[in-house]
Image (cartoon, rainbow over all chains, first blue to last red; front, side, top):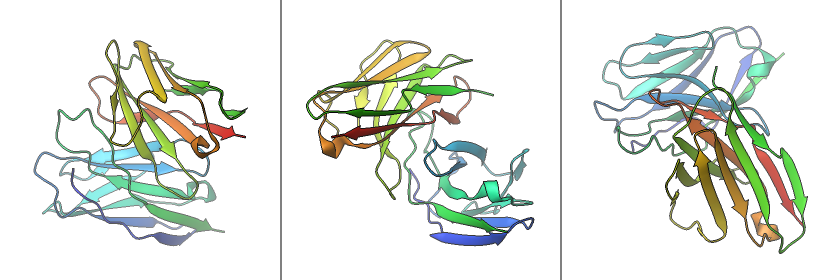
Amino acid sequence: DAKTTQPTSMDCAEGRAANLPCNHSTISGNEYVYWYRQIHSQGPQYIIHGLKNNETNEMASLIITEDRKSSTLILPHATLRDTAVYYCIVPGAAGNNRKLIWGLGTSLAVNP
Amino acid sequence: GAVVSQHPSWVICKSGTSVKIECRSLDFQATTMFWYRQFPKQSLMLMATSNEGSKATYEQGVEKDKFLINHASLTLSTLTVTSAHPEDSSFYICSALVTGIYEQYFGPGTRLTVT
């Protein structure tokens, strides 16, 4: 599984966009990038995933660089409820039952 | 969307007793479920992968005789912590893999406290 690197913590003002970076320089061609978040004392929540094209859903946008060595999760209008730990994960190629190896993630604090 | 439930949400037990935690996929079938453990201020640690109808695959360092996993149906997996000790106190989380879709959906977690 490709290793990911994320900043330990970030702050964002309520209503502004939160841009959370992730480096995954060892990612291989058929590996997806997944983003999850965990609000304190809750189970993780799936946000979005992508392979090479940018993706958008009702929660966030995912921008993947052309060389696929990094990506950015964008929360377009952060709210206080978006305060959580955000995890960028590259699970590895098909056949490994999609095991997720969790790093420490980025602790995002959305401030009023 | 896919919903995963866990029961109980929290449990306190005495040292030496066993505790069973249930993980259910409510509106979909899950051939694969995962069990994680999370200590305070730490990340999730995968304990085992549970496949319906077969034995669970445990991660290195996880005692299979202490953490018994049963995945008897496509909607239910159970984790039994046997002879629990205070060091087993943790937040236990399950997730289910939706067949044909690769994102995992997580339960709300179970807080286990062993006194």
